[in-house]
Image (cartoon, rainbow, N blue to C red; front, side, top):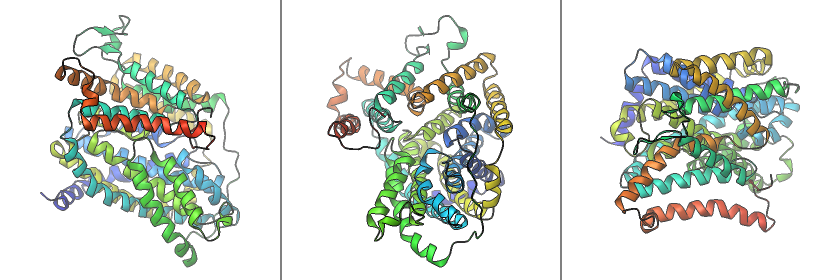
Length: 508
């Protein structure tokens, strides 16, 4: 079948009534997750994985996996849009990739143009969604066809690259990010060794024999950790909310933002493809590019609509671009796609080269649902701008119990284990302490997910080479991946030593 025929089949899957409901709830919850400061897409997706498992209990395994991933992907790109609402109205980024939007968005709101800023953000997000969807359609299958030719050595090196890339761009300190990656890989070794049958780090605790469940660790560190932070640091939304008058942008606004939306979408998509780069870097780059290209760069930071249009398009396009390495190579390129990958594995679906062969309904259904979801986002967000402004005012005393209830019931519904309930609270405390001390949590989760697969591929490669580690350097593709990984870590360090200002630095 041609790509177009596969896409039509995927559209048929996405248009089934239950999947339409899942798309709708995904983008709606995602927008709310983005709107509420502190709960980023990672926490939102981690929280909803156990809930989707119970919602899809009456469907066949393939349909359950498809519907769940459709909903979770909706939460991911919905949160990318929602983050702009607080940035514009409150000068508080809903999540990290919306930091740049505050620079001009809040200034526009103070000038009484909050409606135009939010509308352009919605239009830019939709355009970016379409650009990343086109890229997904044309790049995902060819990439997976190449990846099928990879052996265990190539896969191991590709996973090393993925880990190094996320470590190189996560948080303020590269050393702390690398420590978290190593910590994640260590946690992944807990349990019975699949080859020798020997228990590793189990301390004779039966619950540890099957290893740590990724879901428990992810929900604990992100969602419950956020709860501890809110309680202990007594966080509240004290920002003054800008008033919204006119919602629709003027013709001049549309004309001024058309080119920045196009540039931001394309730039964001290609940055999203890079392992570890993600939406934060995409929005920063898009803003810098617009400022460089502008005839009046001095207006940036004072309410320039281009300063909203471009980064908002870029961070949405990056979320679509990040789905390509996940679906075609089985390598998550961001913290959220790492959690999505955990959801795939939970449903016994291995993302990667064989996904398009073994589960075409799921792969193309998810891709097609992204178009439907982006359309829903546009229709939803234009009239609901004033409603979301009210959501921001949700008192913390109502929000915290809800998050705890979702976390505890969600994990228990999947695991049926009181040990996991204790573990989730423990992970919450650890997550809070680590985040408070600027240790990024995404590399930890990624290390936990990729660890077993890395170990598997390393053992298979060493079996082929009779224990010779040179196999990783003798295979050309494997060598290229390892060189790129090393450069990804060393270039920012060299630039820092030479006094250059880089986005990620060692001291923070």
